[in-house]
Image (cartoon, rainbow over all chains, first blue to last red; front, side, top):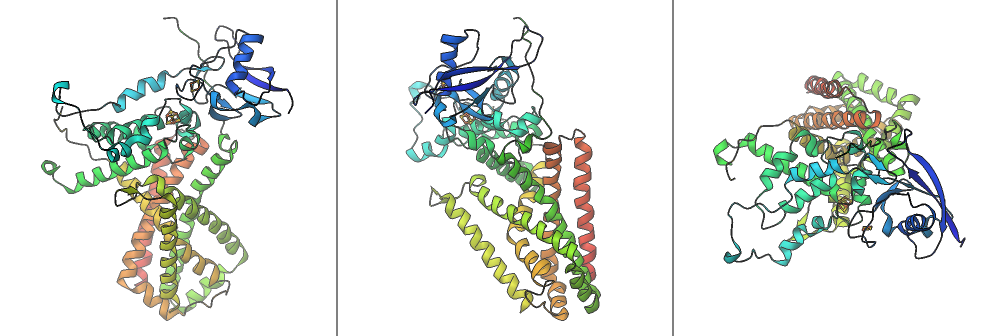
Length: 247
Length: 129
Length: 121
Ligand code: SF4
Ligand code: FES
């Protein structure tokens, strides 16, 4: 194994007047080194001006997402040795505006997420004194997969529909809506459907399936979106068939 | 807060040629043209059958001319792509449960091929009986 | 919080249902029809059914209804998919016009299907 590998890193300085440029760095190629380790090596030893986000280094916080050789990846879970002999292209997550170097602006998602009300909605308001909401293992199982999301935004970076039509509410937000819909304690399905049945809700999705392919937590947002379409369709058929009062 | 000058990256018209999965996706979507073609083709067949024996014979002869055959072969390949992708995506799109348990994806896919086989056998029997 | 607002009736779910139905029909019924009538019979791999028999099958009311339903959902399926291919693949901006043209073609095709099938019964 060669003892170093070249990183081709996107640099962008908002205060300059040029667009993004590529800068090359050679970093040690070690068996246990991830792309993030390579970037940290650059930051510590070579070029302290390089900006990128990370925190946990163990695939939990979801802040280290970048496009590695064109694929959205958690850089802390992507090994340099898989790209030997290199070079490896490291770019900011696709489909988001670049703030600086490898840091992207996630404002759009932050604005969209609360629209689907990703919290438990109840008709009644029980206090702690009334006791807890019990849930069986099966009930937990129904939504668990969708609750694994770490908001890493890899799915948004992989989604061509989101890239082309930024109005689209996007994979993770819809998967999170489904997570609460499927929770036995929740009563908010209808409110969420009101949001997602809109045009920028689920209908723009053409089931490319890339979101599910790149998701590091196996959340399957694409599946969640198709199920929402079916839900919305059923609801609509009911609205046509039944008089208003009966619903 | 200071205004940050963010950079927006444009998306190339050729984005779908950059990754194999994107390319297969666009080909899958283009199968729609060929599905529409087969509707037209089958309607022409029905029309010919309705007009009588001679028109039906003419239609079959026309359908055997080279350019029609080439078109139909290409269209059939796209139809196969549609069938395979459609069946493969079904377990994701539908939450099939058997006695409360999530049905394995392979079972859902396999049962669709069984359906396809049954329908095909029936149609074959109906038209060649 | 529990007040139920009347829900607006929407066209998207209906179109999507027809798109999905068309996708199923295209996957389950179209392959055998295409194999027989576009390849096997014209190319003589299987000897084609005689005209009287085919006319009897096509002229049957059940076949009429079935074929009509199938053609309509297949056309909606194609129109819907092609519409989004134009949006995504070619990044067309005049979305409303694309939608009108695609679904319009499906409607015209459906009318043609009624006429042709009717003539054959
Ligand atoms: S759904 Fe998966 S890819 Fe998308 S933000 Fe959540 S964890 Fe990341
Ligand atoms: S650094 Fe936390 S997920 Fe990679």
